[in-house]
Image 1 (cartoon, rainbow, N blue to C red):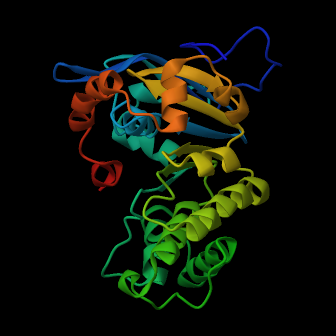
Image 2: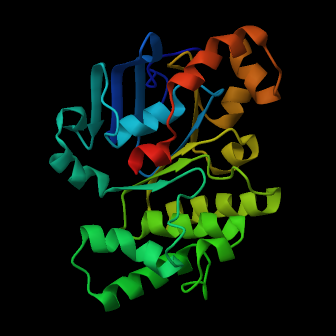
Length: 283
């Protein structure tokens, strides 16, 4: 394992054309540079897990993928198209191909489960009421939930809320699903249930997944590929096993949970610069 800013290396087998590309992306908030000549390719049908301490640019990266942020420099491409150059109307066609699972679910508290799932269909499709009901049922079945359509989010457990939020993320049949800390706030058993769903959606729906997480158990289980961010750049890229064998001290400190004051100081100010959270930015 070695430090790198660009994912491709000469030794690796050839990959299909990347579905998502961030090329030499810079992004700053005031004096704080959060992404620094950032490069990442996301390949179709793979699950790419993004690790790194808080404040290293993970959520900012996700916001660039859906056009919620635009780079100060560099390019963001989706299926070959420069989305950083698109206006809001043009971005809609891209965003409809991407499902988002927010860290805390971001369900509408005053809506039932059924209404939460129907909301994106009402906003973005011409589906009839019957078609919306059917698609919501299929999405809930995909996340192993039934009999909850008439419940409010307050009547659901934490694990059920995450599953409903995931059902909403896939109800428009996206090509890509972005997961922002999908297991946060869940006990180990329910967290593993979410991991199993990530694997199931990849297998059944053939979606491309990007998972931002601090959960190393989850990363090991769901990842085809793991990238680690530090200082606004990719410092490691490979399988989880390859990262474990990395000679990079930053990688080892993170994987072993070893506190390093120098690394912590370097990222503290970036954590503040990256607010608000992804769910607030979308709303």
